[in-house]
Every structure is written in C-alpha cells, then in structure tokens.
Image (tube, rainbow, N blue to C red; front, top):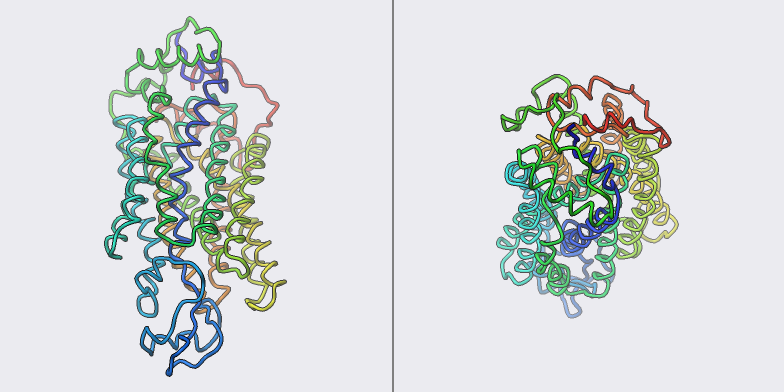
Length: 518
C-alpha cells in the first residue's frame, strides 16, 4: 500500500517535536529578513523643517510638517538650502541626499523600487524552487537580503542605494515565500494553519523590534547596519532545515524523502509505517514538469489563480499602506508603528483559531470587509495636528484595520498554499505573492495622494478591500481537506466545493482513507 506525505505525517507526527523545531528555526531566520520590508518607514522618513537661525530670507518661526495643510510648507523650495534646516534629531535618506521639493518623491519611490524587486523575485525564485528545491533557494535568498542590506548601509550615492534596495526586494521575493512553505510542508492538514500562522509571530516581533531600534538608533546608517548584520550568519541553520519531502516525492526522489521522514519519526519518537511513500494512483502524473501556464489549464484553476492574485494584491496594498501610513497619523511616530505592529500578535492568535474553527475562506472574506470599514472610519477624524483626540481615533481604527487585514493576510497565505497542488504550488503561491507585490508597490503612491485629499488613501484601500472580499466568496473552502499533489488531484478536490460559506468545524474528524489519496 502506498501512503502520501500527509498519510506518513499522520502516523509519525503531524505537529511533533520536529515540526516545532523547524517552525522555530524558520521563525528565527525570518526575523532579520523581516526587518527589511518596512524599515523604509524610518530610513525614508522626512522630518519637519524650520528656518535657519540666522536666515535673512526665511523668517517663519514655526516648524513645517510636510503632511500638514500649512500653505507655507513648500516655501523652502524657493530659497537656498542654507536658509532652512531639518528639526528632528534623526537622519534618513531624505536628510542624507536632500530628497525634498522636486526630489521628494524619491523617498516613496525607493520603497516601491524595493517592492518591484520583490515582484521579480517572487516569479524567478518561485520557478527555481519548484525546479531545484526549496532548501537551496531559501538559504540563498535569505542570505542575499541580509548581505545586500548590510552593504547598502555604506553607499555614498542615492542611485546605488536604490539599486541595492531593488536587490533586497528581489531576495525577499524568494525568502518570504520559501520560509512560509518550509514551515508548512512538514505539517499534516490538521495543523497547517497553526504552523503557518505561528511562524508569523516572528514577523510581528521583528516589526515591533524595528520600532524600538529606530527609536534608540536615530542615525539611518547605524540603524541599517543593526537590522542587517544579524542575518549575515543565517547559513548556520543549513543542517537543521531539510529539503521538502513533498517536493522530493513529486520529483521521483522518494528514497531521499523517506530518509528525511525517518529523521522526523525519530525526533518525534514515532515508528515509521510499513507502507511505501509515493503519490496515489490518481495523482501520478509528474512525468511532465508543471509550468506557469498550468495555472490556467482549466476553468477551475484559472478561477482560483485570478481571485488569488486579486486577493493578494489588495491584502498587500492595505497591509503595507496601513503600516507605512502609521507614521503619518499624528502623535509619536515610533509608538504608532509599534502599536500597529503589536496588534498583529492577537491578530495571529485569532487567525489560527478562526481558520480552523470557521475555515480559511470566511477569515479572508470577513477580514477584508472589516478592514474596509475600519479604513473608512479613519477618514472620519480630521487631520488636526493639535488635537490628540483625533489622532487617537485615527490610530485606534488603523489598529482595527491592521488587525483585520492581518487575519486576512494570514489566511490567504494558508488558503493559497492549499488551493494550488504541489507541482505548481511555488509557482502559484509565488505568482500570487507577486500580485501582492503589485499591491505593495502601489501602497506608497496611494499614501502620497494624501497631499491632494487627506482621506483619499484610506478610501481607496477601503473600496479595494471590500471588492476583494466579495470575490473570495467564489473560492472553495480548503479547511481540513487533503493537499493535492498534482493538477489532476487539484481538479478532483475542486469538484467537492463546500459551498460559498460552508466550512468544516474543528471537531470534525478526518477520514483516514482521505489522508492516503491527498
């Protein structure tokens, strides 16, 4: 008798000591990598400015914040640089290279350049990891992110810094997806949501640490060094992270996969089953290497692919929009960023419970709809810098929006990984994540629209979130269903749609026979 990977994991431990060790190692690797996506909220921050003390041209006594409605905030653009100065006790790439006035968009563009690199990295590393294995791509991409970030701390020219941010983003495109996949591919269906979401506690912890480090280290170059240096030694975890047994099985390297499963069984203190490892008879169609166009090979796969792309686009746009925009809500910028990151902790915990209790689809849909409502409520409070009550209201609803979109983002990771079969999982998840990068690329530009209308960025994000939530109703539920290994297996599982809002309860037991034909 032949058992699938999930069938083996059910007998040797689907979430035992080995899986917890792997999730912890992956989480530790995720911390220095996570520093990079949102560190630009501080490295690209523009401080307020004031007239120089001995200026004979600039006679204003107040400070000018570029996010304010003060009509004189652009006065410095008509005078010499020596006539004005920045006020806050921190530096950034804006203060380093005077990215103000006609050059001010470069600070936002730098973040978008990084997300553009992430987009290309998603596609390239997605294909490479499906072809050459998850492990090699994981360590190469993670090391690339940290080493390039470290080098970028010393560059003397903006153009070179922008190029290096693109390379950092390119590495992130492989690192983030592979880290998540490695955290879930050794876990059985009953624990996939918990393992995948638990890994994101390290993401959240890293973001909170970014706020603390930015508060303590006000020099942008030193902050860049502090957030990249820990990742220079990630290769030491090579011996602790094995290749994906699912990938090995679908590439006819069953003996290697069985050896790794023996290691899993030993660490989990379980006995290896007598059955042979392999694909079920109805999924043994791996002679032809699956490719990108297989995502559109059938009507069912095309629907899953397109809606997954839209959902990722919106989740990323809203998530990064709220995160980057937290420093523009008024009050203490470090506290704002910390609070909008802190709320991800209960968000992750609730996502784990809700995905298992109510299903992946409901969490995605409700999370997006609530995020839409919260973003609209942010616009209710006027942007009065002298009214702390208004600032508190904006921060509270931004936190609720971040909580909701974090639930949706957690769920869409798990949801997408279960929608796509193993042979195209990295391509499917990678291309979906690439769509998310398009959303992330747009987030800085959406936020920049506040100079025309303060409420406009949050209105745009609210509309996008609501539309994506409605579209996700068309996808099948994947909670407690076996993971398809091939395209044929995906079609078979797609034929048993549970309905628009149906989901299995967490107490419903798995059919042992289903676990052998995943």
